[in-house]
Structures are given as structure tokens and as C-alpha cells.
Image (cartoon, rainbow, N blue to C red):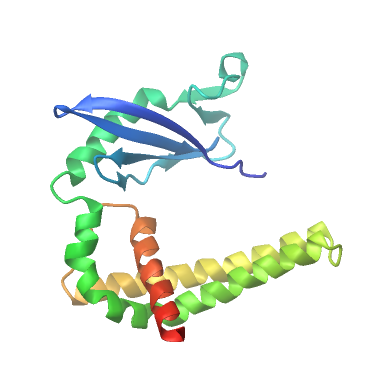
Length: 202
């Protein structure tokens, strides 16, 4: 079964004497809530098993009133989840956590994770080459799917290594990891790595 591209539904909530701006990022089977203003943070969200006859929706899904399968209205839970995100991070927003606790370890983390990031880049490049081969008629769609699935398996393994190395480093250096989705931490560290590579090659 193919996974639909994520959709975004923006909403606002009045709380703590200010306006919280958030968005629901979702497809039919997965979603998370992100706080956009007054600072960025997000939760881990949730997902549905594909065999469950239901799907996530928001008001931008104009066909949901006519659907006969199960419809879950995310806007009915999103406001409370947004408030919970705000209350969790309002004293230490995620960007502050990065600046205060991770930034001093930027160089060490880049060195520690460099080989894993490089391997991920190699497999991502192979995926792009495979897609190009398919687009130019050099391989069949079935062959493309098989090869990309194999590359994704390698990428997943390397991301697990990144996760384990980072977790161990934080434990050894007494860095408290906040209750924020791991992908946000990975995004920052990956950006540091990219900048480091660019600086070294210039």
C-alpha cells in the first residue's frame, strides 16, 4: 500500500494569555502536532495500523462527510495536544536546549557520527541514481522498488547506529535529552555535520 504525502492543517489556540499557533502534519495513518509560535516544538504523534478501517482527517479533507470508512477528526484532539506541547517546553524551548546543552558538543558529535552520516549520504545518492535509471527506462519499476527497498534498509540501520551513538554520548556526558521527537535532534546534528564538511572542503 502506498503512503500518501503528508498534509498540513494550521490552527490556533488561546492559552496562557497568548495565541499558540500550531499545525497538524498527517496522512491517512500517521500524524503529529507541531507548535510553531511562540517557539517550535512537536510531539511524537501517533499512527494507525494499516488493517484498521479508519483514517486521520482534518477540515481540509472535504470528502470526509461522504466516506464510509472510519474517520478520525484530528482537530478534535489537536488543541489539547498543542497546549500540552507548550506546557512541556515553555521553560526550555527546544532551540534553547540545543544552544545550551548540545552546541558545546558540536565538534565532538560531528566527529562521532561522521562515518554514519557519510554512509547515509552514499545510500541516499544510490537511491537517486536508481530513480534516474527507472526514469530513463534502464530498469523496470519492480527492479526500482526492490533496489530502493534495499537502500532504505541500509539507511535505517545507519540511523539506528546514529541514535545509539548519540544516546550513549549523552549518557557519558550527562546530557539530559528532552522529551522531543528524536528527528528534531537529528536534524540539528545533521546540519552541523553538513556545515562542518562544507567548511573543511573550502
